[in-house]
Structure formats: structure tokens, C-alpha cells
Length: 57
Length: 308
Image (cartoon, rainbow over all chains, first blue to last red; front, side, top):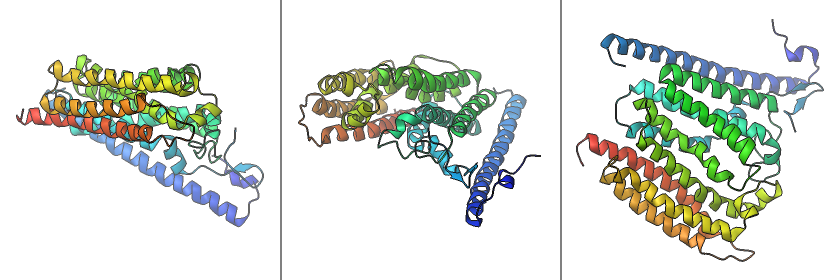
């Protein structure tokens, strides 16, 4: 399990909130990117399989 | 080198996703995506829209990865120039390691996805183009020779070639000509910019042509490249690779380019010159490439529809 960098550091409430807000924002974008990639890979697979079935390359 | 700003005493504030996005040079990427898309649309043959989208996405991600590696390597130089000092690394909004890892991750992902999803020849050219920009241009040539822009222009010339190869799976004369068009276009485009930002480049010791060879020589070379560019852009028409829609457009656009380059090339300036012809040429050169490649795709559409 990964340690939270904030566990061993004393930050003010504002600093801690800013840190968490940055993390949340980055996590949201990463989630969107990974989700989009999963959809893209699925679509590529379908296109490739369909091309093989119909004999196209 | 600066790193991300610290919070408290030992923890750094994570960079924002917008800073990672800025590392990919989104404005440059617009031209990369557009020229890659035009190469793809102009190529003879068919490609499934999803695979076409994948190819363009990979070209864009690869360009973004190479740009991030460029910014990582040049962070110190960027800090010394007004135009680039607000970038994420020189301004201290991100640590260098994150930028480097981001660049390698984007580059690697774009090559693998291109290879598995589209074809491996396109992936190999994409890999070489990233290496060309991130190492041959950024690390090797840029700090060593005033010809950096000429040879480095090759890096920006790859997208239409990759777009074409994504469709056809092989290399013929036409995609090589598309490569040559951007290759020949880059020196007058960039040197026009270098003429009015030369003080910045001189300050950080980058041997840009105006700094090393002087303004007069740079102006002559801008005109020479513009004159050479014209026949290169007409070559696809001459060899029968395109129709008159592209050919006439290339001729008209090229003549205007030569005219504006002549205004820059034959000029002698004073110390407090506003450099308006240089700024005009720089602005036009961007429009020129957009319209020229747009016409290339339009020409293919006209041929498919039987209009020419």
C-alpha cells in the first residue's frame, strides 16, 4: 500500500486543501484518459476482428 | 533547475494537469494534427474511420511526447527567454522528473498503439520522428549549428508522411514530397520569427542563423528557401499525384510566399525597426501551410467525386 505524502508533513488547512484539490483534479483527468483509451482499444479490436471476418486487411 | 513549489517543509505541490497539457505544445500540435490528417485524407486507399482517428491521435500524442522531452531538456534555456519563461518547468510549476517521465510515456504509448492499431511502418516512422525531434534536433543540432532549423525542420515534416503511410502501408514518392514541402517551408517560417526575437536567442547562446551569420545572410536564405519551396510544392501536380485544385492553389499561395519573402529578403533595417514584413511573413507562412495542405485534401475529394 502506498503512503500518503501528507501523512508525515504538517500542513495548514489551506495548504492541505490545495494539495488535495490538485490530486483530485489530476485523478479525474487520468480517469477520463484511461476510460477513453479503453473505449478506443475496444473499438479498434472490433474493427480488426470485423476486417478479418470479411477478409479485408 | 527549479522544481515544483514546496508546501510546508518537505512536500511539493503536485503539478496541475493543465501544466502537463502545456508540455505538449498544444499550438504546435494543431499544425501537426492538421498536416497529418491532410496526409491521411490525400492518400489513395481506404482506412476505417476508427483506425484513421487512432492514427491521428497517435501522431498527436507522439508529437506531444517529443515536445515534453524537448521542454524537459531545454528548461534552463527556456528560463532565459521571455517567450518561454512562463512554461511549466522554468516557472517552477513542475519538477523535471515528472516532465521527463510524461514525455517518455506519451512517446512510448503513441508508438505501441500506432503499431498495434494501424501498422508498424507508420509506427516506425513515428518512433523515428520522435527521436529526430527529441534528440537529433533538441539535444544535438540546436545548440551546435545555425543550420539547426533546416535539419530540425525534418521533425515537423513527418506528420503528413505518417498519415499517408497509415493508409497505404508503404512509402512512395508522393508522401516523400509532402515531407519535403514542410522541410523546405520550415527555414523561412522559423527564420522570419528568429529575426524579430533574435535578442532572446542570442541571450541563451542558441546559434540561430541571425545571431551567427547575421541578418543580411538570413534574409537572403529566407528568399532562397522560398524560391526552392515553390517548385517542391508544385511537384505533386507535375508527377500527376494531384489534380489542378491543388496545383493552382500551390502556385498562387507559393507566389504570394515568394513575394512576402522577397520583401524580407531584400530589406535593410535600422536599429529600431518594427520588423513588420518579417511578422507578416511569419503569420502568412502559418496560413500558407494550413491552406496548402487543406487544398491537398480538397483535391483528393474533388478527384473522388469526379470533379476533376
